[in-house]
Length: 306
Image (cartoon, rainbow, N blue to C red; front, side, top):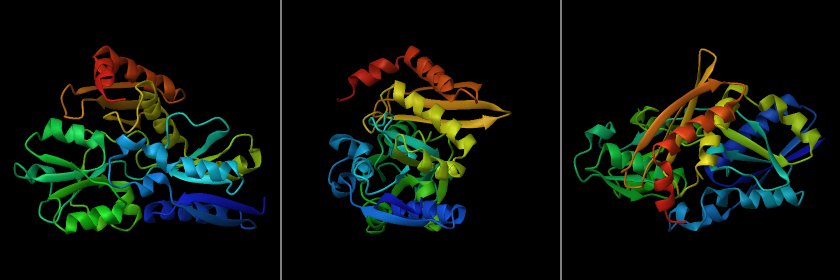
């Protein structure tokens, strides 16, 4: 192919991600023209309610898939944590790229770390996953919803609407805003979302030429970890409505996976780990999901609003 078009959301972070993939593809295929088709999704337009109430993170993906289906674009670049666990028929995930920092970042103009916040401090987050872990560990803090792109969230903090906010470290670092991070939450203290920090590239199914051009961007270690994490989420119905985290690493050639599920208020916190063969990451994810279910995760999931 002589031309590739990337569909992307128009937020600063999404455009950084698309430009990053564009530049890598141009380096891999010097004779190919790579363009970006910027789009505004419903997830970007609806900012006055939490994502869990308006259809979840899939809102960031659907319009890009329409562009792929119509032939306006050849590939779409996503944050893996925004990609629904089941893609619609006719689409496939061709690439899972090397992961940036998967941790959550603590951002504040007055405090250095979460443990410094006095009782009643207002912490902003858009994520039920972060909220549940915050409420479980720091019940004396007030957690309030925070939507918008990274710049909007930082502006709300700077205006004094929050004492601190929690954001994905990867997004801040990619935007050159790493200096705003006061401290990083360990993956034990705040288990990341499935796929957090990794980029995914979605294409139309049955498009071997495009798939072949993208192949070198796949990062096998990250892909194995993310596939295990996503299997936990898939089994437990993971979406914005479910306070759930899963994070995998490779240790001595084995895949080690930690995960949790809880009520949004932090109660009923269930945490466990599983490990297994890196060549079968879904089996490791399934094993962890089974452990969580055996400890009562189903009752938590069934009690959540549909």
